[in-house]
Length: 326
Image 1 (cartoon, rainbow, N blue to C red):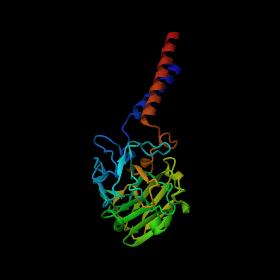
Image 2 (cartoon, rainbow, N blue to C red; image 1 turned 90 degrees about the vertical axis):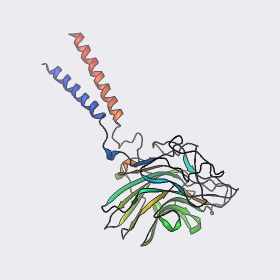
Image 3 (cartoon, rainbow, N blue to C red; image 1 turned 30 degrees about the vertical axis):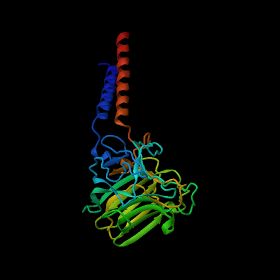
Image 4 (cartoon, rainbow, N blue to C red; image 1 turned 45 degrees about the vertical axis):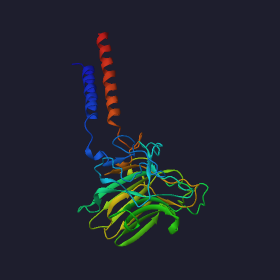
């Protein structure tokens, strides 16, 4: 066999290997544990409006094994999934609608809903790391008094929904004098908090959509640690420094529920409430930041497959041309 034939055979074998490998099932760890884009339609959510009480979020329960049941409304503080498109962020894939509140009675917007996790975080007897990401817009005061924005933020609870049960918060809160974005942990041992990005993130500075990634390191012996990444732009965790890190020294952080956008604003009718979307849970930073075109990501199987098919086609055409030339 000629040297040319040997090279040609090797190239065909390599291309075939690429093609076959590209269509092998991905490893289970590469997929997120849970995704909720608040998609509207059969089997998902009903679009609603909290100002009219139509199809509010509380009670809706799209099938998702990561959760123990549907969304739970806190008191009379309704929210809804609005069919106005998704929040968007860079190259992050999105679907469906978003959770937000209506401004009601020319004065107010108020909403708090939560959903219970199937497994209470922090109870595993072995060390556990889990990630969550979501898109959030903290809203603006518009024509309302800029110092009277109330509470806008993201909350997690343990045991039930509401202030007595709050385990984690990422918020601004005029009611308690927290006027810069702050992360807070509350456990049986007490409360610790930290300004996100060192401070300066007032409601005005936060205008727009943000991607927040939370990393939870639970340990039955060492401290439980929560790290917050604000607005990462690729899927490589090593490229980003956490914007806030808090520890529960006695390893007593537990989380049973998480919310959407907690919003309580009574400053007038000219403000824009916060918005919430695109919730992901996963075992790695990359699971919850699936950016399209991410230079740090492995090419998608379909892309590799197309490359392999293209290479096979080119080699086949070259082979036919060589045979005709003989």
